[in-house]
Image 1 (cartoon, rainbow, N blue to C red):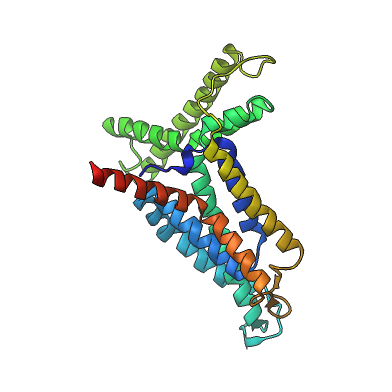
Image 2: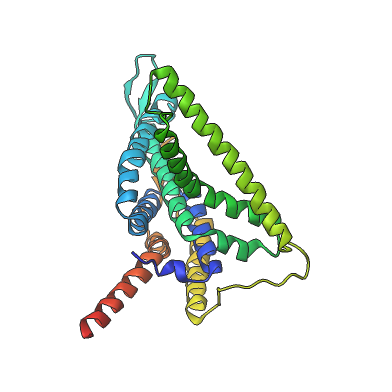
Length: 296
């Protein structure tokens, strides 16, 4: 499915993901955690389809459960004691709820980063940082491409090794280990050679030299200005609200925070409006396309 938000200017994409990831890492208000998690979860499925749904169910959900269960075993703060563990330490309601909140925070950040990796392609990184920090820009662009290229290349090498009976699925356990190490060695060699070739190619083209002009397909349009203004207003209001205590929430020693105040509701609405922004853009575009298709 085509993502309309990815077609916006790289500055818009970068600013949006920077802010939602920062907010996801630092906001501990339970409603903020739920809003951010739901939006990131839905957007990751929208971008990656069944692959994202499988990843979320196979990896993210178990991580949520494990993190939520481990925290009360090591964190015994809180005044509401539910029971006592076999080692004599108390199991408190506050530590249980904080463990759930910490687990949601972790998986939400992972989900946002999966969306970030899909939208912020290597060419966008080079466009944003190539003139200011060319070396870092090149490293970041190569790193973002490494995982998908690594997956594709390891399939090629594995299939080639399988043809000569040296795949990790052939032979005894010891032979499988030797074959797996051989494939890994080939992959590391390929990755290092590819990195050197890329660096030499970019250097031969004058990448990073002062005064070098670059061609770019990215043009700042009116919709990008509106999107930047929208993000700026939401972020500014959320920042002001968080510093003035509108999103105040603590878990220890007792659970306490802003929940029913009208000002908190407006901040939560602004946070929801920020997190849901890409989905709204995509859904609006899909609806417009459906209407145009129905008229033809």
